[in-house]
Picture 1 (tube, rainbow, N blue to C red):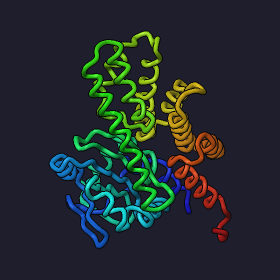
Picture 2 (picture 1 turned 180 degrees about the horizontal axis):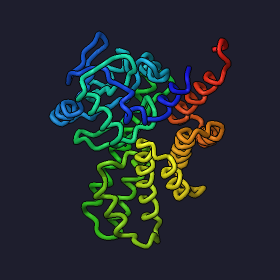
Picture 3 (picture 1 turned 135 degrees about the vertical axis):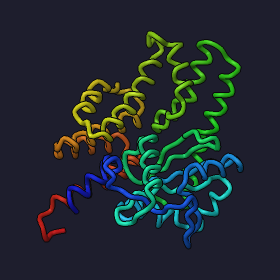
Length: 314
């Protein structure tokens, strides 16, 4: 495996450079395994009409080992389709390297990858029936049965969000800000705060001096978004500066600390500092070895090790 291949697996920059291409050019893609939408707007219309959530899979079907595992063990199985057919509209946004598709599909996939800050493959973003994200996940071991249980657990975040939002509608001032904060907390941990700007602005408004720590928390989340944007634009030095200004406290949520380390590793990779990159990846894994992100980071390290072997030893 070449360093160029590893770079494509580690960075979403490939999408910005047009090095990745998608998997079909129609709104509805049907194969022998089932039906997946490739047009997000068409899928969103179906979800809204039928009051279903959206399961949006970002994948690299012909080059990404963990994507192939997710397909073979979970999303390509009859068990998964039966368990999710009354819960989700399925959307596949593929970034293969050998198959071609319509240019408008390429543009859509890259736009959505930027919007949801996709940092590796496979990534799954769960959206409610109105199109607002509520959870992020990826490959999980255990097959379709365990994965469906995992999705049910993530649905608890949606129910919790909706209950707290409903309570906040009946509250005012600081009490309303605290309820909104509680609703947004799990969304921030999953990095899915897109489309929640109005709620975030309202929380910050009630904590202008950071007395409750709310202003710092949500401004840090917005820095994460800024870092990913700089990475996608290959502005690594600027991204490194923002990361250095975004250090998290030891008691910060582990998912946030792990994600910041991952972004730091991506920047180091872009700067050509590969030994430091691997060290930081291992630091991120050590924070939570069983998280979906850790599974992805291990695959990156494994690919790096294969790349370092002398010719003839692969």
